[in-house]
Each structure stands twice: as structure tokens, then as C-alpha cells.
Length: 334
Image 1 (spheres, rainbow, N blue to C red):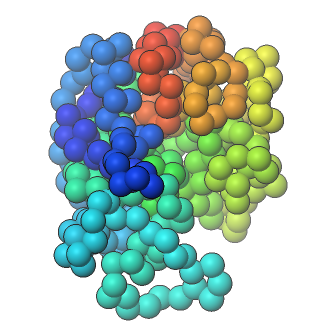
Image 2: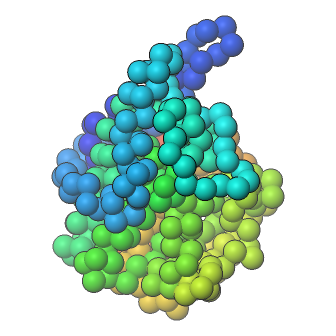
Image 3: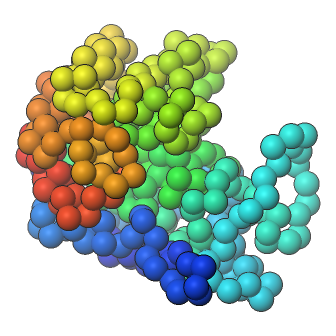
């Protein structure tokens, strides 16, 4: 399988300040990508497709914010990485906000996604990596893997969160639609892809199906419940299959089969697969029980659709096992 990557994604390297003033690497660290690279070998270099594909999904105002946020944070005399701490929960409206602290709240939904000096560069090339892998699939490859880091599926059209800054899967899906393809998105990360769902929630031309931890107990809590099925023209085009903590392969496969059945009925020309390896039994922030060998079985089931597929990397935080888990999935798919 052809794989794509750009080393500039490593520029995104936020640090977490501890109470004693020490800084430690953030959970979504460059080490994740390095572990995957060590397992899969040297990928092809991503190609720059420009910002137009980003603007097809994300608002101009949000992109301008993301580009300047860290510079504005430092210009305001603030140390470390930029992070919000106040959010407009009620009576939200468009405001002209000069202070970076306020804009961080306006364009994010949690405090788990700091903006570092290299965040724009890393996120930009993560999206370009997804577009480059998509190009291979559009050119006739049955599947291609985009090593996207930082991930993207929690990011909406005008907000960041969940370690995500640009929605790689949505950007690729929109580009595929522009190329005349009918697209379905399958998200198999442990956490619900709330940003991807939000982007397509009122559209009927894209099917979004997700298997994830029950949001009654797990992040992102407010989205991903089974009764969320889409609105307006998108009614019925969203399928959420939440599973209880502790789900192993035996509990996971029936949900996967249900998702694949819905996708087959939708009959897409192209599948965008948001793949997260945080369903692994040893993941430090997740509670499913899949093992390394299970990823090959999951991948074979998805590949059995016979639909050209772009695989975009999302989560997975057990760094020591991450490379093996990704390699197992890619080998099973191929």
C-alpha cells in the first residue's frame, strides 16, 4: 500500500506546563508519528495542494485565527503555548474580539489542544498528506495511507479540539466530492469524530458512520449518541454506534458489520477511513480491548467492501505499540 507523510508535521510539538514550572511533551506528541514511521518504513512525500482545499471545509476566519494564534499569544506577553480557558456556552454570537484569550475560546471547544509555534505548519502538512494519499486513490490505487499528525476528526469547520486543528478526513472527503466521487466516511477511532459529524450533519451526499466509546462515559461526551442521525437533508446520513468501555473484538465486530452494511447500501465510490489505534487494550487514555492482531481482522472486514479507500491516521497513544498496531491494520487491509 502506498503511504504518505511530511516531516513538517513534526513541527507541531506543544508542551504541557506542570505546577512546578516544568514542561513535558503533550500526549499527542511527535513520538507517535516517529513510532509509526519506524514500523512502516519510508513513505512517499506529501505534495502541497494549497489552501483552497482547506477553505472548502474551514471558514476563512478560523484559518486566519489558527495561522496567527501563537504569534498573537506571544505578542500579548504570554508564555508557553496558546490555550483557551473561557468558552461562550450561552448566547453565543459573532463578536469582534481583539484579545487572543477571547478568540481562543471562540474557536475551540476544550482546553486539551494548545497551539504551539509549529501548530499551523504541522496541521497544514497533515491535511496535505491526506490530500496526497487521496490523489493516489483517485488515480486508481485501491487504498492509500496518510500518516496524519496532528489528527483531525474532532475539528469542526470553525473550531479546534481533541488534539485536532484541521479536519483531514473532511478535507479529503470534500476534495473527492469535487472530483466527482460519492463519499462515505467511516470513523473507527476510540473517540467520536464530532467535528467530522458536525461538518456533514445536514448533508445527505456524504454518509458518516462511527464506532466509538459511548459518549455517556467518554470524551467528547456531548456528541456521538446513537440518536444523532443527521438533520434536514442529512437526516439518516449519520450512523453512530457507541460501545461500552471494555469492548473487545467480539463486541466490536457486530458494530463494524452494521456500519459496513450501511456503507454498502449507500454505495459510495470512495471511502474515507478515520483510523485510530486508541482502541488498543494498552492505550493510556482509552478503554477498549483490541489487541495488535485484531487490527488485521478489522482491516480485512473493511477492505471486503471493495471500495477505494483513503486511510487517514487519527488517534492512538500507546506509543510503544503504536507502530505495530498501525502495521497490523495496513497489512490486513492490503
